[in-house]
Amino acid sequence: MFIPSATIPERGMNANADLAQRHRALIGRVAEDRDKEAFAELFDWYAPRVKAMLLKQCGSSEMAEDVMQDVFLTVWLKAGQFASSKGAVSTWIFTIARNRRIDVFRKQSSRHYVDIGEMEFADDAPESEEVLLSGEQDSLIAQAAATLPEEMREVIHLAFVEEKSQSQIAGELGIPLGTVKSRTRRAFEKIKQQLEGVL
Image 1 (cartoon, helix red, strand yellow):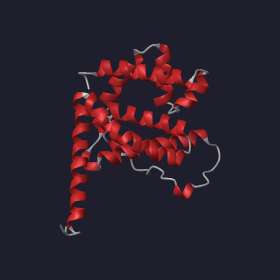
Image 2: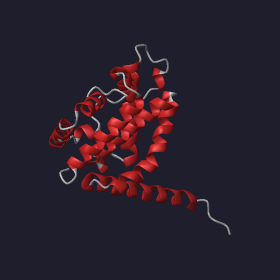
Image 3: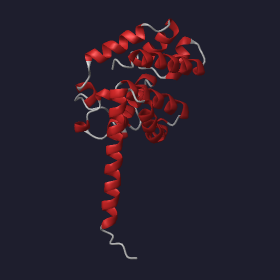
Image 4: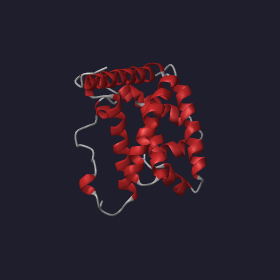
């Protein structure tokens, strides 16, 4: 059967629009209900794509994994700051990933970038998540983090205040990378439990 070629792009566009709408609904469920299933679906879709982008740009599987985990922790904690009027969920997530990757590169390297012309530096204008930043939400998160055991609080502080990668944290604290990841996961769970029903 002959299918007019003009219908093919239209179907592709409809599929993309449906996917974008689905992802907006999922991020809304994460923001409003702390829905773990919605977050898992977003993670399953975006995590491999984010990691592939980071791996291509970082050249290190370990660094790409570290940054990817940080990106999705940020997505969970700040889902409420996503604004559909500012762009798609994919744009928001990849912007977080690019900015996080640039921050890590800047902190790890004391030399000039050899490929600086290809780097995607953040615009001086505030990102949508910064524009929509909720002081009340940040305060609640800070209060929850303050109740963590010292070893977890230290890891969270280094990761999200000093913006260090998990590899850097392991080196600075003199502990295995697996321990850093374990403490981060446990801290993440404790913060989630305290914030459920509040955010």
